[in-house]
Image (cartoon, rainbow, N blue to C red; front, side, top):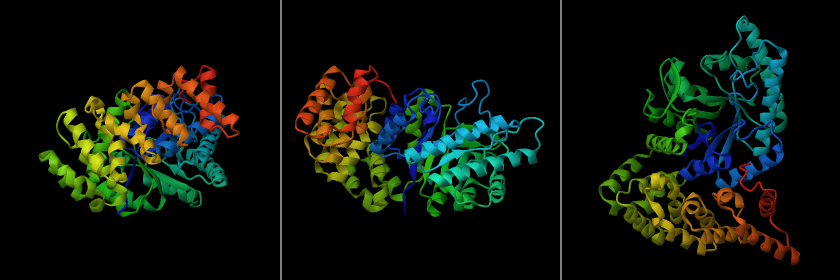
Length: 467
């Protein structure tokens, strides 16, 4: 059984810089991100787009995040009207502007090596007939399909409540009008299925299987288009996630909570917990209960998790077991250290990568710093990379953190993997980078590009820029 890949939408992190939003999303255990093009995160209309895309691509790769490009920025084209103009605009100039934006999104997706570009139809203006609007939409989609085909990008058209194409019937009609091109896939929003589709969401998943390239997920109520946290609506999620597994879906399942940016990290953590619980192997639920009742059982359950649930799900299951561990920060820290010392590399990685999740609201504190120190003493690239994540960025003192960053340079670990680099970089770290660069240059050896980038950012006074 393949493990589902959970992502989170950057539109739910509107109060975060993009670098930091990606850091939090990856740190919580998500393996993907739905990246909305907008003025706050990745503005396609501001200067230096190529450079910013290259940095974002490196960051995504270093954090192990798959990506889908979203085009639902509210005011990206018109500062006065949300989501305008659209492909069904009555004015040719408006349709051309939306088409230009979507073509740019396809190019951005190619540069980011994104899995898909998600977009939608729009709402026809008063006085525009359905047939006229549908004709405009089909013409625009045909043009986007052509562009996407040239660069090998998949499209995920999203039926949206209240828009010209709001359900699966509408998507199928549009797809047929386009001649059923392979590039014209489907983005299915599970909440939208509950909101207006006649069939249960799990049946919608099975119906959508041949075209599915992206899934958005949240809770919702019948007839009310409001994105809710899991448990606040009416959707039964285990059958939905089981259906995705049954059809062999391999794309991202991305949480879509754009109005929860005020509590982004907390909402994202709760959402991942809910998704993992709803998709859990039966062994996992039983093991979690055993750990809650008897923390000592973790010693025997933690090593065998992957054997029972599959290698792909092993790390996520181990994270859930660690979350279930009761006790004070000191007691949990001691338990983590035992697991780490006794474990193989895979188990040690699971402990290190779970630290940001366990640290939610200060529940762990600095108790796990000895594990970070131990990992940083090794020459294992995987352990060192895991050690320079969000937990180290929060708790390592500045001298130790600088040494950790420099070790990454010596081990050829991309600096994009270092959490908090833009926040914590200081004059002393720049001096250390400069000394390293001078030494390499004198020896006739190349200086890593990302180190030179850090020096350039510092020299121009932009070392805290998030893109």
